[in-house]
Amino acid sequence: MKVKDVICAAGRSGYMHRDLLAIKSGRAKPNGSLYEGAPMSPGFTKIIEPATIISIMLVLEDGQMAFGDCADVILAGVAGRDPAFNAKGHIDYVRGEVADALRGRDVSRFKANAEEMDKYSRGGKRLHTAIRYGISQALLHATALSQKQTMAEAIADEYGSTISTKPIPILASCHKDDLGQLDRVILKRVELLPHASFQIVSEHVGLQGEKLAAFVRRVAARCKEIGDADYNPRIHVDLYGTLGELFDMKIEPLADYLGKLRQESGSYKLLVESPMIAKTQEEQIEKFSGLRELLKKKGIDVGLIADEWCNTLPDIRLFVQARACDFVQIKTPDLGSIHNTIEAVLYCKSNGMGACLGGTANETDQSTRISTHMGLACQPDFMLSKPGLGADEALMIQTNEMARTLALLQARR
Image (spheres, rainbow, N blue to C red):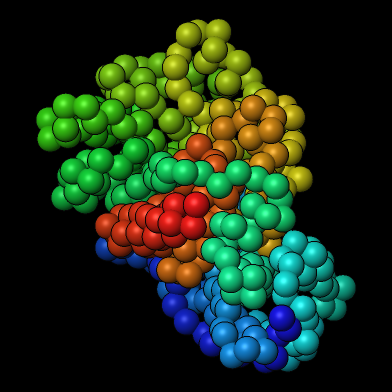
């Protein structure tokens, strides 16, 4: 089966771009959910701005249409990531030379096509990670259509993986101040919660760490109060380097604080993502490795998740080889082509490293469905809810896509 034509359309992402450097600088003035001031990260025109996507549609010889969505992460342009993606700046050449590279392509197999397009260069530079991400989604969808398979089956066939027979646990991504949203994900028995977002020390964590501690305590108490008697989720918080700022990147007091935070989570296991963000990848790996070892030495049962500076497949391999964390957040758009994500999850699993099949609220319904098939085919420890930060909609898309796929596979068996 070959690609007959390529059609592109600009659209909306599931969330926004946020300039983390400007927000953390202290010079940006809060204005409701916005910030006034000049952006600092590459690709931004404002500190907070709506994000856009490009849908790449592959029209196949038999008239079927496969598509993928080019999207990037919320916090673009930092810690080794590509600049913030804007559809207007890319769609013309995607409709031109990139489409030319896709027309006439045999899509009966996925991996070779994905690898080739991931290396495609323009002006001596590789395409933006968002473009590579979207192209590869469309190629996987096309392969599945041509083979009359689910996308999970197409992945398993080419990578020799075993498709899960049950849903992959989901980490619900919620607003930290939305108590109604927290209640809903508890009632829906989500396996991990609430992710949240702690980006500014004084406002979100507290100068003594008291605000973060109170938040974890509140989540644990609410799970106990309204959750089913047998409901036992893991509590997860994303700290965006704030503890590194609070403790001046010193791991001894940071570890002791995490010990206190673990006490606040009570009977529920605690996972912390990006407690520190170093200035270089080398320092990030060194600090994370030291913190993980210190937590073990002190008997503090906290799961450490790496995100920033762990963006690409080679990055992930470095973190895994250094045993620098307990889980890697495999942030799908940052890896470009999804064959890198597939290989990253399988690499983590084969090397005894926990894997979160992550991504960003900035994605779309289609990129989420395709990620869900990657999850079923590769079996990460858990998946991040996406797109958006509404939680309900993301849980619906992911849960239903898994249920449909598993039911189809069961019927075939």
